[in-house]
Length: 259
Length: 276
Image (cartoon, rainbow over all chains, first blue to last red; front, side, top):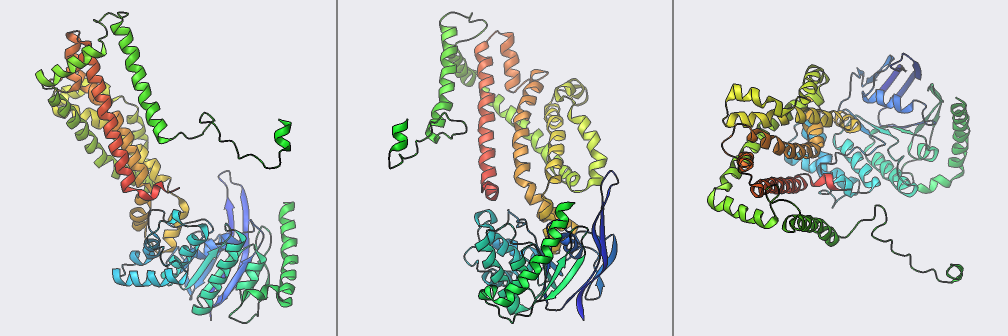
């Protein structure tokens, strides 16, 4: 059974002067339990809008989103989210940030601490527990954001171009870290990106978005076995997939540029 | 210079002069420059008064002022006046802050509350506190309550509006992140909006405390029997400009000290907001 079910979800934005922009055409999409799916598309195609609707931060104009058969009504702890911008609470230490959701849930101090310790270690930030976010690099902040989302034990992890603001080397390492976490826990992941390498390297399935108004144009299975090593990025199979996706995205980017 | 261009090893980059735009100066230089102006000011003042360019009736010299200051403390119990004034400022200010900060937070967080109060508070904000003094004397007499109320009126509406703007300007992405972590509406206010706004609210309070000082003196100029403002009106009747000037300087010094103390407290309380 599919865990996340997106059924006929579309989104029309209306400006204050009554101008209507169709950001998303009706999308039907399923994400199975323990799957790692990336949504790949040119910038401004509505892929982030779709993710925000799944998170409950935005509402669809038509259609609905089901998680384990339950309709999504608003944001909740069962859908953890990592944003592109740095969204750690600057007044909390790294440890307090990771404990935020646990505390909100009323978990005991000791249990909070144990869970936070585990996930901080999991993203390689042991020793930085008492630092404030602004004392850490962008990559470390995003690792904390991943730990914070995971500590809440969501049913699905939503990531909105989380590595988009990082430099290339850091981004590659972050992809390996996230993939390693997924391989160990098989937490369902829906990952939005415009980076083709990133989309292929981590995913079991890539959904390619069209230019605005967005819709899912193609779906592609990625069958590389796990655990994956970064060297697969230079394998002929990877290259072939990348070449195909490059063509798909290029057509969409050009369509977007013509608008 | 062409020869410099041809030289094989480039010279170390020339240190920009301290007078280049936006170039920081050292801490020592800052202190020296800051104190320097005080010295220049007193020297000019002394030059005019001791040099006989201004009649001592209208402007006392620094020396006369120092003598008068000594007299004020030894003969006239000026420390009591200072105590009274400080008490009034703090009383009115704390009372205003205790009510205004929660109201401002509620207005910033809940748009319905804001729509209800904002127009009225904005209107009240422009009513000069000093204009209420005659009315307040009618209502509350010339006792302490009247002075405290002047400070309250002068501070309350300013704090409410500024706090509402600060809280309403909270980072949207942090609020959304908190929602995805399972925070409730109350959790958002308590654990995102308030802690995020706290340093700026503290800065606002520091600013308004500075204004409260100007209101208290006005309140004390009219219908008062103690306080720095009262001493100033008394001295005016006696043409004692030395005492007047000293009173003004004392107000400035207390304002400066309280400002420094407030700043230091904010730095301690909100360490995180000072990381760049």
